[in-house]
Amino acid sequence: YALPSNVQEKELKERVAVVIDVLRASSTIITALHNGCREVIPLIDIEEAINLSKNYERGAFLLGGERNAQKIEGFDLSNSPYEYTRDVVEGRTVLMTTTNGTRAIRKASEAKEVIIGGFLNVGAVAQYIGQRDEDVAFICAGTEGKFSLDDILAVGAMIDALQNMGKPLEMDDLGLVCLQMYSTHKQNLRKVLERTYHYRNLVRAGFESDVDYCIQLNLLPTIPVYREGVIRVLETA
Ligand code: MLT
Image (tube, rainbow, N blue to C red; front, side, top):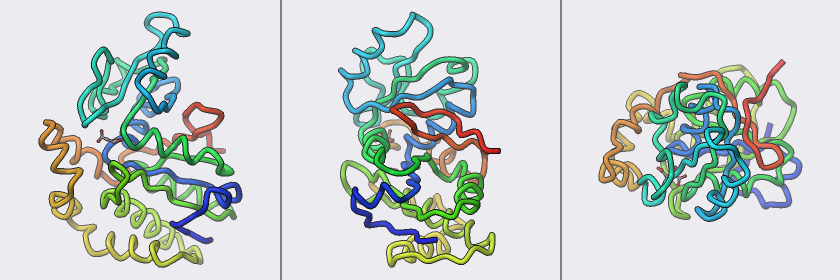
């Protein structure tokens, strides 16, 4: 297994990509699909989402996402995973646009397969990629184009889970950093995250409790997979 982090776009074709945006897009997508959402369509622009919604029957879709961590005007849902409950999302399509996460997913589309990961499904993702004899690229969404510690810690958690499965791993130096960071902070992820930019931004926006939700390890077994523009639950044999 190779777990590179600085992968060229052309190299993605030969790899399974795991897209991670712990705070909060990937955690929200995992939650929505776990709660019976039919599919999530990741979109770049607000306009793109609104235009696409015109193709759906009333009641069949929801517009979700954020700008500056807040719900977008006229949208049904923000990017808080707590809003994506079963009674709200079951059987519906979510048209979602976020600042970083949905862009990262779209950028990963060249990969052999694109799955969405976070702390919530770390065990399920590690098991799935551990069973495949493929190279993997972890794609961290970051925050506003910058490195974001929450994603790096989740990559470390996945590498840690793969190691615990006894798999022989090869990884690049950034993979080693992720693993080291996770090993150092795994007993209290919240404490180190409190010092980060994205955490402070979410607190300012009134979403502090989302952080506690998103950093729960192995809460859900659901693995979202992105194929042909649509994210659905990966059916594993
Ligand atoms: C994003 O995709 O940009 C993030 O999930 C932002 C947020 O925390 O809502």
